[in-house]
Length: 516
Image: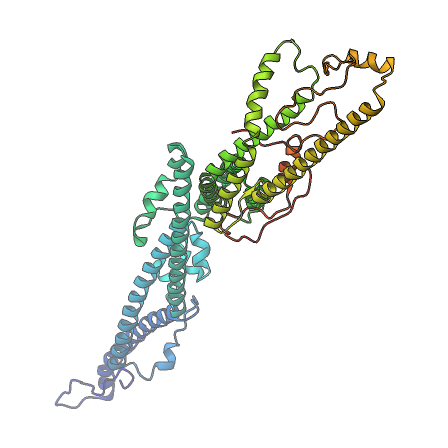
């Protein structure tokens, strides 16, 4: 009775005398009833405590399947209703805690499953790393709902969300590059269609991206491969455009007789593009800037370049006239002789204008240099230096011609005086030789009837053709002016306004500039 928590025994008492045997017979049913109550109470204790221990096991760090219920015999001294009610209250608390934890675990597991599906990650491998029971297909009570499991699930969800955000950012950046390349390369709709689903999903909020595998590593690699392919194609096309625009720059510089920037030379740009040292777009922008500057430079030089071309044409005519004057058959009645005669007359007039043309050209060049605070370069050489040297050598040549004419005049006077004193006695061979040179000589009408050498009518600016003299300076024009094209100078930098790059003449002679 004490074990069951009952302290009073109610027995039926007779007023008369009752024997011991009768009393024992009356107590026996009560005792049997108490024994039944005790067994029933022990069974209740066992069931409640078994449930408590099982729930505690599920809440523990390790999900052990064995029962840790104490033997009922150990507690047979206290089987009271009060104790039973205490166990029942404890069981109710544990059952509520278990229900809350199980609901939380299921929620976490479902979220992990959804994130793994979006990211294309193995769900079973992920949850098995937290606790193997989370992926078992058994009853719900078999799942571990301990604190460590909940913490592991929460940490995994946090990591998966961070990975999702990282992949979304990466894919959006990749998609932005891809769209830029599509527009730049004018890609077809067929090429864009394979990524249309990804584009529509990436514009959605982060939490709204739930399609399976849309953020998988495979999808990212596929997008990156497409970007790489289009980038290589873009580089190839930009390389072609760079080469084309560089050729345009060289044509502009060639026509203006200025040196193009060597930093964008084809050999150098191709090496930079192939090595990935420079972005082709930046290189193309640099060349475009150089083209603009070259056009501006060419426009500012146009007036002087026109005068240079006229001066070159005059020098060419002067050189032609020198050769023409030395031709002994220039007055023959051959084919085209009259054309050459007309050209020679025009050339003589033009040659007389060369000094004035040079003075005007030098003055205009100086004015151009002063206005821009930099030298006027022609094929890499300073134009003024070439013109000054040309003018100096022309004066020296004219002086040589003058001295030569004075010498011949003196020789003629001395010869005339000698003939006046001693008389002229030409040999028969000499007379015969003079007679044969009818094209180069004429009779001077002397009384003795002898033929004396008389030069042809001298052309303006030319030497006597019968005399063995050097060519005039104009015939050597190409040597002097051509030197300007082989000057060792720094490349023309459109941004440099310094006058410190004046240079001297050296090197080999290229082809003469064309007449514009």
